[in-house]
Image (cartoon, rainbow, N blue to C red; front, side, top):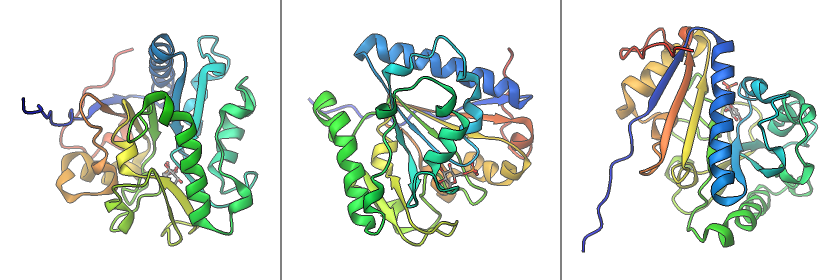
Length: 260
Ligand SMILES: O=C1O[C@H](COP(=O)(O)O)[C@@H](O)[C@H](O)[C@H]1O
């Protein structure tokens, strides 16, 4: 019998009147997703981004419903710098979140900083870290994260996948490296589209007027192929956009504000 292929689900857009409303709803959404994953498999796998995203997770701090000992956290992308460097996504997540919650240290999967001089080895090692977590447990060709949390730069990049970059075409690797990021620092590693697009859920968070122009390109004109538009998790996966009113200002399709 021929296999039935479903088209990816269209993005679900949540537009919030205020950033605080977005933060609260995002925390509730994460807790619900975490609970479903733990009920099913006893653990919750999540990938986090850097940039403006970690601050948006403040609704989890002090929230007793967050089962930190069940979380396995990876980075959607990371800069090839020491873990306490101001450019490190791990450093940012630690300052904004992990230093304030009781997550076991070994549940936060960082890059191996002994390999910073060789990006190929650094990305291979991070891929192996993912394989250790996912391959035997899920027996999948690509890992299936319960949730990947992404940001989007004003140029439409997400993770460290930049417009026009050759890594947009990567089909095999789980983790890839680049030495020519147009946004500093130049040396980074990143999850690839096959991994992002196998996730059960992906949430983009985009706030502020600086994201308005690019958000309209990504959501109203996805055919332009900006990196954020290429995030289309395979069915039954779902991509969500959590945006605020300033970021939504230039959208043609005006999503209704979320009622709280
Ligand atoms: O360089 C990066 O940028 C993106 C977007 O950052 P934002 O500050 O505009 O939200 C971020 O998602 C990614 O993790 C980071 O390495």
